[in-house]
Image 1 (cartoon, helix red, strand yellow):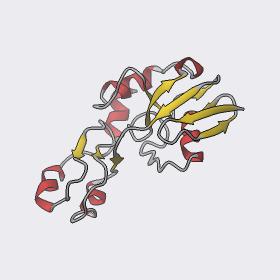
Image 2 (tube, rainbow, N blue to C red):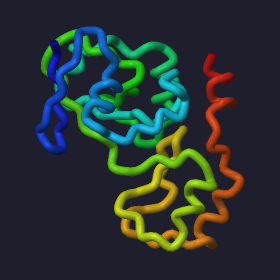
Image 3 (cartoon, rainbow, N blue to C red):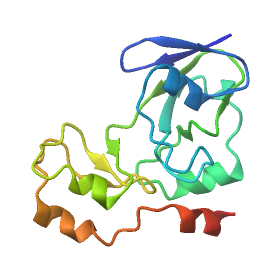
Image 4 (spheres, rainbow, N blue to C red):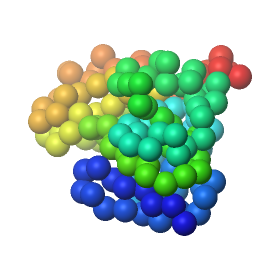
Amino acid sequence: MRQIKFRADQSTVSLQTDTRLLDALLAHQVPVKMVCGGRGLCATCHVYVTAGEASLTPASQREQLALSVLTGAQSNSRLSCQARVIGDGVEVALPDGMYVESFTELESLIGQRTSMPILHPVTGETLVEANKIIIRSSIMQLKDVDFSIGDVGTSRA
């Protein structure tokens, strides 16, 4: 068994060797949307590996491409659906924000104050800043934003 440590609350989750880092998020009850179904095409399972990066499988070409368009990507960024745990000492931190899957989902939040940034599921770009009230006029500019990942997957294959 391998231990994954979550930096935010210092809790740990045990996983079998060669299990996806995503499974640690799910075991920790992190609300991961997995818009692409775990194929490495979106940003909704993005994490920062703060320790033990060598204890994960290397990033595939597909993952590197996905991370290259991710606004919040850093040198220690990984897509948890693609990274497999092969050793001990992995510690992860989660990006600050909530991903949305569609304009309809964002529209349903009108009138509410966001407790965290709302992020685009493909690029990770901040759509609405934290502690802002979502108003219709501020999100109408996003109505034509393509939240789908179908085209992204095609261009990266």
